Amino acid sequence: MKRFGQILRELWRDPMGRIGMLGIFLVILMAVFAPQLSHFGPEKMVGLPKAPPSSEFWFGTDNYGRDIFSRILYGARVSLQVGIIAVGIAATAGYVLGLIAGYFEGWVDRVIMCVMDIFFAFPSILLAIFISAVLGRGLVNTMIAIGIVNIPVFARTVRASVISAKGLEYVQNAKSVGVRTGAILIRHISPNVVAPFTVQATLALSSAILTEASMSFLGLGIQPPDPSWGSMLSEARTFMEQAPWMAVFPALFIIVTILLFNILGDSLRDVLDPKLKL
Amino acid sequence: MDHLLEIRNLSIELPQGRRKPPVKLVEGVDLTVRKKQNFGVVGESGCGKSITCSSIMGLLSFPLSLGQGSSIRFQQGDGREVEITGLSKAELRKLRGRDISMIFQEPMTALDPMYTIEEQICESLLFHASLSKAEMHDAALEMLRKVKIPRPEQILKDYPHHLSGGMLQRVMIAIALINNPRLLIADEPTTALDVTIQAQILDLMNELRESYDTSVIMITHDLGVIAETCEEVAVFYAGQVVEQSDVNTIFHAPAHPYTAGLLRSVLSLGGAQQELYTIQGTVPTAGNFSVGCRFADRCEHCMDICRNRAPALSEISPGHLCRCWLHADTPKEETA
Image (cartoon, rainbow over all chains, first blue to last red; front, side, top):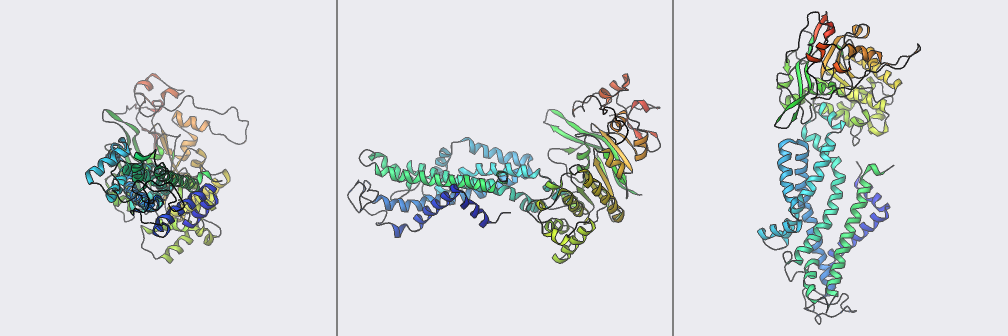
């Protein structure tokens, strides 16, 4: 098993992986040090409404005169938080379900995968809207909704790797010397799942951030006056002609962050896939 | 009783959905393995020899299942006979590795690349014996010496990809024998190895069998391996045993046309060999067997009766069983 440090080293050696890691590190720094980096509070009306970018307000101000740069810094917190927690929920539930479905097959598999397919059939944004309509608005419920929406992808990925790992001779061999089911799952099958699972997690992070942006854009996610990149974009659409910077900067950050996660995911897949070596 | 394993009327079924009846991949197999016996199972790919042996360990993979009336009786170390088909999962797990163990065809893939050789040998001990870490280490080391691995101390710390195929197969044998099982199932243990290593591995297995008093079921499609190692042979064709006898009779006086064909298609050194003999046609796929003899379409001696009535496995001379109308002095039809 590759150690964590070795994976990081190999990622660093890959130019794309390096860009992804550095970029995401910067986004994390932004979120962590938002209070220190920003000049103003995210909810303070500090300038004239819709002032264009200037030396005082780097990204301009919005329709209430709030500093967009500060709001983007604080918005990074929301985006990352949603991404990580929602993916955490989706990955944990998906992993367990996929492992059970893949290993036991038969009716257990059919029931689990049938439910997953039903989830899959809905466009993810529609399902997320439905779930948060049931649970109510707000940050926590948004994260739960996005988490649930992403479960099927993980369940499928994990199930597929488990099924292929189960056919491996060394798994058969472990069974033939009398190793317990639980031990087989943990010792021999799980390691085969790690690579696709990790890659899926990085990709899901970007899609979770995007879903949160869309939901906030639709007014279901983060509630004003709290900033999130999606809600900022949503507010900006009425003022597109008068103050394009209100839309440009949040959109830019959404695009770049998602791109960074995707780049990292791609590079991680190359590093973790032994078949691409030699 | 010196019977270690008795398989009676074993059938293995592949379900075809709710409407259609299941396809029988293996049908009506009776085998008896005595203690300390080397039993050969020979047949071409897909004839059911491997799944027959998986079923002995209760390792049939989904969705295969045993047919009604199948019986596999095994005599445990304490002399008690158990019906393997009736065991619970936990009981089966105890049996595997301790009383029955298995060697696989492809040593390169039969070991988990994530763990060292020591960890993998100890895994087999872990579930059957309560030993301390140091004791397990010693046992593993001892076992590697027995399978004649050079530098055992160091090999224990290696990962599977550090070793060659032949070495890995020795490790596999070590894993299989470490709990001193009563029955060892070797599923084509030498197929993936080159010829010189094959011979070494077979010699090693013969030697260890002597010292461990283990019975061996040797599954192979290589008649040479059978000649080298086995005392009793069962020839499989299309999910049935078509001939069974001691190894001399099989090689010198094969009764079933299929066995005879197999023997004629073996390459031998010396003598001006003409073109290699081949058996015409291909094995019928499970589910498409004719009502008569399953070998009829490919048989040189095919008669009318062969196409219409299925012959039963009957004793043509003491200890020699054959499923063929040619040898049926008292023709018996299979009552299925």
